[in-house]
Length: 197
Ligand SMILES: O=P(O)(O)OC[C@H]1O[C@H](OP(=O)(O)OP(=O)(O)O)[C@H](O)[C@@H]1O
Image 1 (cartoon, helix red, strand yellow):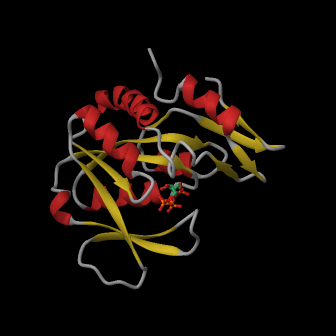
Image 2 (image 1 turned 135 degrees about the vertical axis):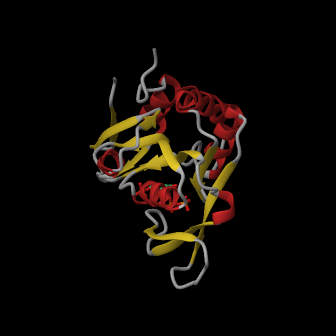
């Protein structure tokens, strides 16, 4: 049986073959993950995520704009459940809703991520989906928002997870199982080193 973190061969091979590694921190695969998107490939990844999430019986997918929307929507379609995304505002905007301030890894600075209370009705089982797990601040904010709304974060799924960053630990501390299709253990000498198991 496929584990929650078994690599998806097609994704792992493309990361190894096509990923552009900058220093020890940055892996660029935006030509198929989150800038240019290949619908068929995104659908295959979403099917794999959905197959792993089904056992958690989620009622809703929660993601974050912008790059989480494509995978989040396609996973929600596979599971035939709604998707809600956290909207990002300038940190000073005052909004009467569930919100957390988070850093934006790709854009720099901070944003306020907001989810309307009316879409997170108490008691829902929520699966978080995003393109990348890095330091985990985005996913941790989504977990916090979910709990504050009286819902249960049942799992957090990522197409790609950088296991050398803090995100895994944050999810573990929050007691939320992690699902991923590619675990990047390190970025060394221009290459992405992927976990094989
Ligand atoms: O685990 P973390 O350290 O939080 O990093 C992961 C987040 O970083 C990116 O979002 P970002 O805000 O950079 O870009 P986006 O607005 O294009 O989604 C990505 O889409 C994840 O949401």
